[in-house]
Every structure is written in C-alpha cells, then in structure tokens.
Image 1 (cartoon, rainbow, N blue to C red):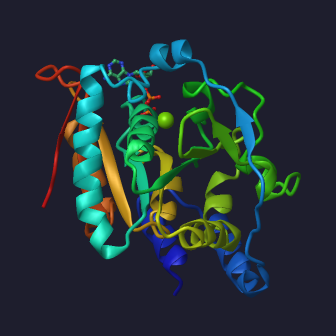
Image 2: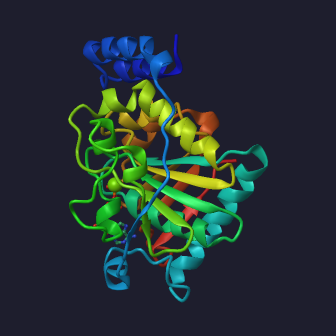
Length: 273
Ligand SMILES: Nc1ncnc2c1ncn2[C@@H]1O[C@H](COP(=O)(O)OP(=O)(O)O)[C@@H](O)[C@H]1O
Ligand SMILES: [Mg+2]
C-alpha cells in the first residue's frame, strides 16, 4: 500500500477521508508513472512593504524587534536538528485554526533565509484558508499552486521573489474545494520531491492547516522530512492536543511552538527530544 494511501486510511478512520477520496487516490496512483517532473526557470519579483509586514506581525525582518531573537533561536534549533540528516522540508501545522501557524511559517522562513548558509522557499499549501500572500502583502490576485494544479500556469510562472533576500515564495493561488485529492495526488508528491532535490542547500517551509481541521495536513505529512506544530496559549485545547498527538507521525515531529504565550514577549517554544 502506498504511503499516501496509508495516510488516507488513517484519515478515514478519523472521519476525515471519504471512499471517493480513497478511490481517487487509487486512480491517481495508477497514473503516477506518467507524471513528468516539474520544470521552472524564472521568478516574479513583488515588492513587500515594511508597514504591511509589521501590521501582520512579520517581525523577523526587523533586527531590533524582541521576537526576532526568538525566531532566531527556533531557527538555530531546527537547523541543528535537521542539517546533519539532510532534512530540508519542514511542514508547519498545528491543531485548529487561528493559532498563528501562518505567522510562524513566514517569520521562520525569513529568519532561515537570513542565515547565510541556505536559501528558503516558503510554500502555502493551505487551500482552505490561503494566507501567505496576505501576510507578505503580495496582493489578493497573486497566482499560485491552484493555477498550476488546474493546468493554467506552469511552475516557472508561479514562483514569487519578494524583496526579502534569499526568500522565494510559492503562493497557494486560491482556495480549492478538492484539496485532499490535489494534496494526495502523485503530481503533488512529485512536486515536493522535485523542490526538495533541486537545491539540497535550500530549506522549504510548507504552511498547512491544523491537523484537527481537515485531512490535508496529514496526507501532506507523508512527503516531508519533519513537522513543526504551533499551539496557541489559552486557546488550543487539551482535547485537540491529544487527538493530534495520536495522528501526527511522531518520528517526523520536530517540536511544538507555543504561540502568544503570556509568559514571554509574544511567542515561546518547547521541544520534544
Ligand atoms: N502572538 C500573537 N499575538 C497576537 N496575535 C497573533 C499572534 N499570533 C497570531 N496572531 C493573529 O491571529 C490570527 C491568526 O493567525 P494565523 O497565523 O493566520 O493563524 P493560522 O495560520 O493558525 O490560522 C491573525 O490575525 C494573527 O495576526
Ligand atoms: Mg494559516
């Protein structure tokens, strides 16, 4: 049984995946052999405004902001744990909605791009509530993965280079009602593999929905090396945490960021070793 099918089976037992999704996955798997690797060559440049970034709590661009140091610490710990194993794909997920997953994804991606040793690619795979383009102020009509998966644009046409050094972005491009099928498709698996292998010294951060909200992040977790969870202080429930801890592939779990903690400036983190 394929890894994606196994994830769908697990999602199904949790009531997240339907028979139709399972069948669709089987058909897609049969076509897997025919999927050509994606190709890309050029990047669109889009200016980001410091005011918009600040308003959206994207603080990592500002060396003087107290939370920037916390993201640097998070970056250092992640690099320390992943570099020696060649793990360069990190999925940011969490428990429910509105926990700060996208805010953490963008700040972490910028912080990683600032580290001299690697470039960073930030990918929005939240097709329920795409928000990376909003947080970075890239404009509401920016094209992205939706257009790629609907065969309207090629991959080389959807990369965005904001004016943040060494950071490249792949926006979601919009909501997709068939998100589980798209995420579970061989084309998505092939895309992640290509992104991962093309530049081994590049880190790729995928911003995904919470594991308790839909099957998408669990299906996607099959493709990545590691997963970072985001919980929100006085918000994420004990019940949600227990459910997710039974779902998430533990061997891939890097740790959990505790966002909006009252006992720190704005964000704290702890790690499971
Ligand atoms: N530490 C924080 N302090 C205050 N507001 C925050 C904090 N983290 C996130 N938010 C706000 O909470 C909302 C949800 O954040 P977001 O990153 O979109 O969450 P998610 O991706 O988990 O749905 C946004 O309006 C964001 O600005
Ligand atoms: Mg989000």
